[in-house]
Amino acid sequence: MAVSKTNDRVGAIETRGIEPVPDSERHGHAGQMFWTWFAANISILGLPLGATLVAFRGLDIWQSVLVAVLGSFGSFALVGALSLAGRKGGAPALTLSRAVFGQRGNAGPTLITWLSRVGWETISTTTAAYALLALLDAAFGIRRNTVLTLLCLLVFIACTLLISGLGHATIMWINKWATVVFGVLNLVVMGFLISTVDWSKVLDAPAGPASAVVAGVGFIASGTGIGWANAGADYARYLPRAIPGRRLVVASAFGAGIPLVLLISLGSLLSAGDPTLATSSDPVAAINAMLPSWMAIPYLVAAFGGLLMSNHLSTYSAGLTMITLGLRVPRTWAVAIDVVVMFAGGIYFMLIADDFYGPFSTFLTLLAVPISAWIGVVVVDSLRGRTYDPRALMDTTRSSAYWYTGGMRLPAVLGWALAIVAGLLFTKASTSASDVWFAGPLSGTWLGVNGLGWAVSMAVAAAVYALFGRKGSPAPRGGGEPAATRLQGAGR
Picture 1: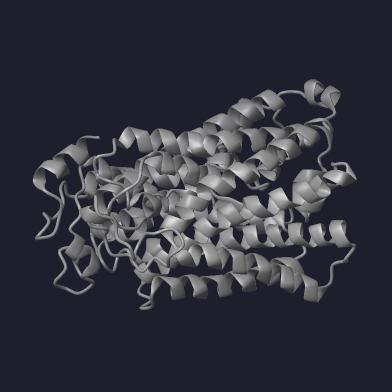
Picture 2 (picture 1 turned 180 degrees about the vertical axis):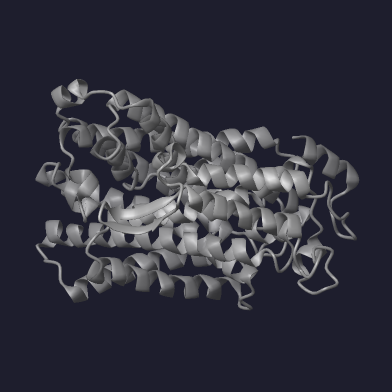
């Protein structure tokens, strides 16, 4: 199969933007999704997620492990299922979403997706800068100050820009080999962290209520796979159509599930003996304090590398999302603009904000609602055998087959909007008991207390669109996939 020498080659700048990838340039295998999602989830952010399950939700270690398995594997199986659209349509997730919501109606979900990506990038960048500051202190005795903080932010952002700027082929290559290196380092660090666990406290901890387990699964799902669900197609769009969909789902679930279960479970173990990890404003320093001094450098290198693996994926997707929003620049420039926003967010978290995890949890809680609403609509649409017209996807004028009514497919847009309202009714977002950012009128009910507003949103969106969305989709008017291929793809 002929592969483009300019669009998707390791070490070369990917010149393709959001336009669908033709069959002649499709290549790769399902295993790439395993490495993609493994890379996205080997960062130390999994440890405080696990710590939260024990410190704030009162789960014991066995419940925490169960929650980690269900939340991680389940949410990334969904990511894999949604990535099938990328294999079928050859375009990024939010570009394909134009076929579902209409050229104008897609603007809302796309904007929310970009905000989600920027939020995750800011969190990763901030944590990585903390790691680099601690590394300089441990290796050279250089103490933190404002100038050094800004420099560390810029170093991490420059590394992110280099990888994301080069594009898809380079990302796929780095995901595999760098993940092996940083994965091994993380295993070594985890081994030493396990030796610090106070096992008597862990084994004596009482079990939490069943409702807390349900809430924990929702928290882990919304903090892991749900946040990536609208990016899966971005990395599957170069894959050949012939790859069975089940392989993509399994590869995605296990690629993310393995590192997440290990990290979340370890975070739960650590917090059972010492709750400071869950409340620390600097998680890197909190974990570093648990290790012997000679382990500081390998630990901090692993932390920096793991965060970079996650961040370059998020930044790459953010660039594609900005172009889908209407930014008329090459993909590399979209990535560059995105990292400027990321730098500003890092400055806020490190030099202005007093709390790190309060805004982190609030951010996850609020954005999970509209993203889940998008998922609900898209899942129903995919189950109906959606096909994609490459020309209509890129035609944003009234002549597009995806213009529908005034640029919007009303059942999808209204279903998405109503689902957001329904989800927010059950949502409470706060950094502490006294600092409540938002509280829906039904946030005190069982669903609200257990943090399931995102699940309500997904269910309402799916139900509304299933009832009022017209079955079927516009047939490709040229350049689309052959009829036989469409039928085979819809059946997987």
